[in-house]
Amino acid sequence: MKSINIIGAGRVGKTLGRAWHSSGAFCVQDVLTRSLASAEHAVAFIGAGRAVTVLAAIRPADVWMLAVPDGQIAETAAALAKAVTRRAKAGQAAPDKPSTIAFHCSGALAAAELAPLRELGWQLASAHCLLSFADPTAALQQLASTPCALEGDPLALTALEPAFESLGARCFGLAAEHKLLYHAGAVFATNFLPVLQDLAQQLWQGSGMPTEVAT
Ligand SMILES: NC(=O)c1ccc[n+]([C@@H]2O[C@H](COP(=O)([O-])OP(=O)(O)OC[C@H]3O[C@@H](n4cnc5c(N)ncnc54)[C@H](OP(=O)(O)O)[C@@H]3O)[C@@H](O)[C@H]2O)c1
Image: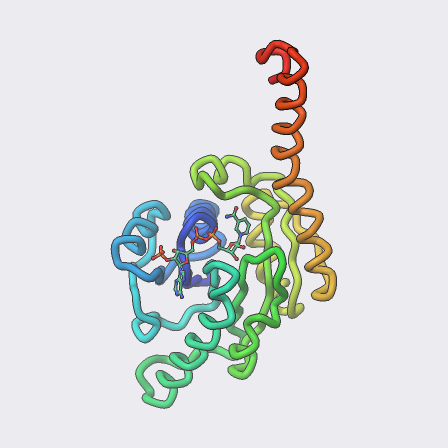
């Protein structure tokens, strides 16, 4: 079974970590967040893994998921590349394999956001599940049949597609240059619908329609 390290284990990181631990697609190894309390919370939710807070403490793995906020992805990839290079120079651990895969979970950004890791020969991807992870326990129930947009290096996608399919997700490929367009559609489909519904309710309520009917 391939091992996975998780950097950033908030709503998405811990949900996917737990789902893959259950499906057996990946063996969850190290889980890193900014605070030990949150890393330990994530490990408890996932049911596997070791909580860490510094990149220097993470062991090599087959797959790395960077589930940090979009604005932190490039910085985290650069810091990870530095930590791996430093460790290799110091001979502190078995070297990371050139076939190592790293991916992030942003709907808007492409795999190229992880560029510093390409210099290590790693295979890069982005994988976006079209789902609200606001409540991780609810998201776990909804992963089956969720569309999942995959973009990046073919070797990375070859490993990630079966992993997401093991959760019941419906994977499809996306070109890097179409990610923003895809993300704009996702914003309309997910964020705007509740806004439209709320506007309609306010208009109806203003017209005197009974609240229970408008709802
Ligand atoms: N939320 C959704 O519904 C959703 C849906 C699809 C895709 N996504 C994507 O999934 C990714 C993660 O989003 P999320 O909603 O799961 O975020 P989140 O709930 O805010 O969790 C972010 C995690 O990253 C950690 N973190 C933040 N900065 C870090 C850094 N510099 N180094 C290491 N760890 C760091 C946080 O640590 P602490 O726990 O210590 O704060 C937290 O564990 C984003 O790319 C987002 O666009 C989100």
